[in-house]
Length: 152
Image 1 (spheres, rainbow, N blue to C red):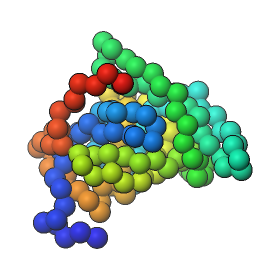
Image 2: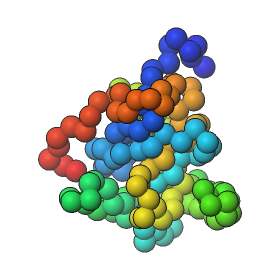
Image 3: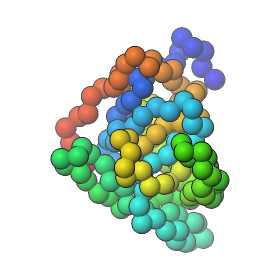
Image 4: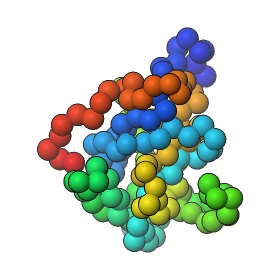
């Protein structure tokens, strides 16, 4: 574990990439109250390929005027009971994927759930950030503003 002075500072919301899923950038809210990260996913199903269980799902991202959709596939590691923000327990598929926050790339667990009506399609929980980052709640997008890209 890095000491506090070695950790990078991030804001309460950041643009992150999910290179394993082919997503260049998605806006994420940093949620230190949540243990696990979560993202919006629809039409998800479990499939088996070569003895490996995979989750196939559809992700919607981008701004309200220009929404994009992508069908993604990732290794599913388990189904987990999670207490949502409303205090209700729900069972969610957990996937493993690399995430890129600024220049840091690391593997994290992400639960899949429907977040269509939420302002942020992705929440980064504390297990995804605790080893590498500290959060400055007065700031946003400290790892950089959204970059123009032709692929997403």
